[in-house]
Figure (cartoon, rainbow, N blue to C red):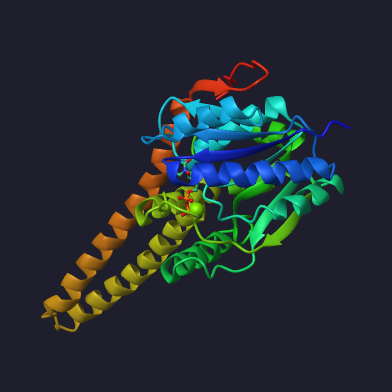
Length: 324
Ligand code: UDP
Ligand code: MG
């Protein structure tokens, strides 16, 4: 059985960590090959997501020195999820199974052995799950927890504390390539691909160097994307709120009529003003939520490519995939 592994690593302005990542990956791949866990022609694919620093130059140097390293350069910055997809779609054409991970060495490389053991037992998707999050800031931990709870409450099937450290077989990648959505949320799509899956638990470390490329604004956008791509429950919630307000308004109508008949028509402005603000706020919020979904539809109907590849550095002389 062919056993070519491709490790896919999206990189955005990662010049500070790349050398260390490459050094540790060299070691890791050598040990995996020695153990017979993957073939000798296995590769590490760095995807440069339109970095503005020397990331691409470093990837080129690495590739020149060692055929183990391949490089994929996107035409511009498209964000983590798109960069990862570009790498995975390249891997789909060139390997038997892939492992995706971040460039910053937060994920424990030694979990890969266990990933592959699960794969050999017949799993097509293996999720890396963080045991604890004590290396994250309190704020990040709490917001992440809130996010997973919210997703669960909205009925979305995602794995708690699983980021994008994941093994996928070629078959699973083929499945993933059939999801044509532009609003990408890969950790939500993997369970939808189906097949037998397994879990591997590991401790997540600190970022080796450099700073997080996910500031709060991006994190929030990512969370909203995740929710609106996988659940229509917020829309239903709006309908429910609307219905409740309608019922309340009927009661209010009754009340005002009774007050009018009884001749007590001097009603204070507090209640009037409060209800105007309340209803106005709820309406705007609801419009915003509906707008989120319309924005999604807008983006999906345009069917713009999810990534465009500038160059693919590899020792086999293969062309980049165009299926974006
Ligand atoms: N990344 C990317 N494109 C972007 C932002 C991030 O390819 O626009 C990569 C980044 O280089 C890293 C991974 O996505 O390999 C995760 O980013 P980061 O470690 O900054 O996120 P955090 O771990 O803080 O959530
Ligand atoms: Mg990180």
